[in-house]
Image (cartoon, rainbow, N blue to C red; front, side, top):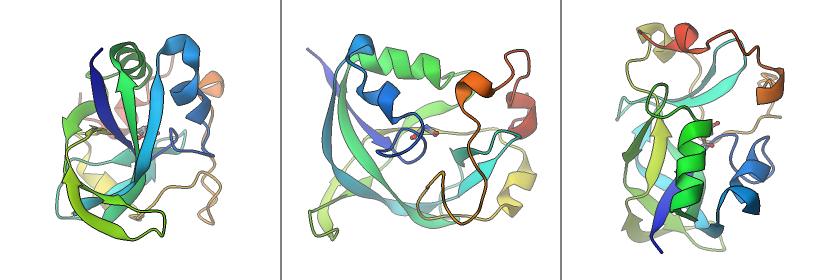
Length: 163
Ligand code: PCA
């Protein structure tokens, strides 16, 4: 069985709104590996009318991002690609991350997990506040609008991407 390593930084993290979809056995298998932090800086912003977190494909801007590493099987990866509308919306790229140990220290081991990232984004998104870690209930007050509550006929794509 082929397993892929995935770095999640947004709503798929533990205690975040879409975590149950990551863990749901119905759509495939997921195993937690460790916490992790990106080796390079990336812009992590919250945008669109639904307050969605995005990692923008502009390396060297923003912060080294904290997230979580999981092994997922092919079924789960296909499910998540569909959920994240990849590749129409997000791209899935491999980027280097440092693994973190139980004491939250970064280790020297670098891995190259997959990550959902936004390319062809509107330049104005770079003016948004950039975070180093995402929490839907953070002091920013930008509450994530659950997928069920997002209007089906409205495409967030036009909010954030050049199409
Ligand atoms: N879900 C994916 C990408 C952004 C999001 O909300 C994640 O948590 O990594």
